[in-house]
Structure formats: structure tokens, C-alpha cells
Length: 244
Image (tube, rainbow, N blue to C red; front, side):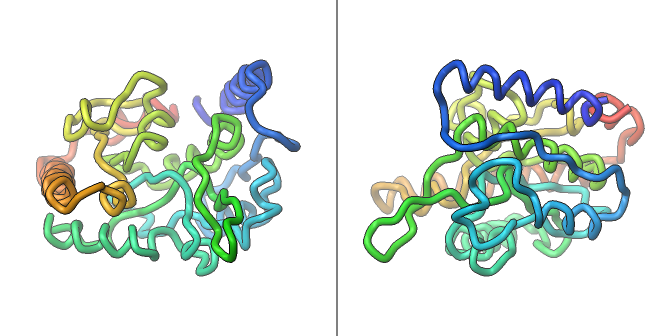
């Protein structure tokens, strides 16, 4: 079971990161409670101190959505707006995500949205808080929370938004531009795919590229939606890879 193996696996990742001199501060392993209650899981996550990111963050930003969601969207980490508001994908990237979901025929209220890292990592620049990409130690320390969410939600389709989410699920070697839109099996869902993070679309250097990648993003979300239109496969078979 991945949840039982998580401490040993994360410890290994932390040792490897330490050997590379990655990150600073105290790191340990998140300890999610063994519960089937989402509210209890979120409550404990809000007090998590497994990595140093909590010190500069306003609050833990846990995932949200219906417990029976068939689609889970996995991003990188909360941004400035999410950190202040306490909810995932409510800032500019979240607004673009809502627009793309609507165009793909997906009701945002029926999907579960979360991030690989639950605290906002940033650095000051004048009066602004500038996003910093989480490192391998941040991701490893927070990973048990993601695995606990996956165990509870059991999504039929897992969509990785951007490279951090993709490497969290598939490991090193995946590339968003090369691998986006392809439906494959992962340890966490029988149908898993990679696409752009909406924040990457907002950072596109010109309008032409932004429009092209946005169209591809919507197309990828439609593929995810098509996956849940097909007859459900044996759910126990789908999830015993990860949780049984």
C-alpha cells in the first residue's frame, strides 16, 4: 500500500535531496490521519509543519471538491491569492481554469482540485510576494497529503497541471509539451494525463502562443471529460494499484 510505504519513500527522497544540498530549514514527513473523513484530513493538514514553507505562508491551502469527484486536477502549489483566501485555484490562473473547464463542458463544482504542495512558497520583491517553484524536498514532505486525498477521492481521471504535478505523479523524465494530452495509467488512477498549468498560459510571451496553448489546454480537458463518459471500469481494479 502506497500510504503505508509513504514514510520510507519520502525519507529516501529527503536523503537524496539533502545529499544534493537542496533546500534549507527543517524537513520531516507529513503524517495524515488514517481517516475516511475529508474534513478531518483537512483539519490536520492545516496544522502541518512538515516543511519550512508554513512559516511564511498565511495558511495551508488544502484541496476541495466533492468526495465522489470522477476528475481530480492536480497543480503545483497555491499562489498569492490562494494563500490569502485559503482555497485552491481562485486567483488569475484559477479564473482561466474555470473558463477552460466551461469550454470543455466540465462543471468545476464536480471536480476535485488540489496541489502537490499545500503552502505558498514565495520571496519578497518590493511589496510583492513572488512565486518560487517548490523543490524536491517541499514536494516530498507534502506528498503524504496528496496520497491521502487520492485515497479518499479515488478519481477515475487524474489531470496533472504543469511539470511539478507531472513529475510528482510520474517521476523525472516527463515533459509537458511532449507528453500533454496522452492518457496513460499511473499508480494513482487508471486514466492519468498531463497538460499545461493555467499560470503557464498566462505567462506565454505573445498572444499567438497563448491562444494556441489555451486551445490545446481546452482540448486536453475535453479528453479528460471523454474518459468519464465511457463505461466505468472496475473501480477496485483501478485503485488497487495504489491503495490495496
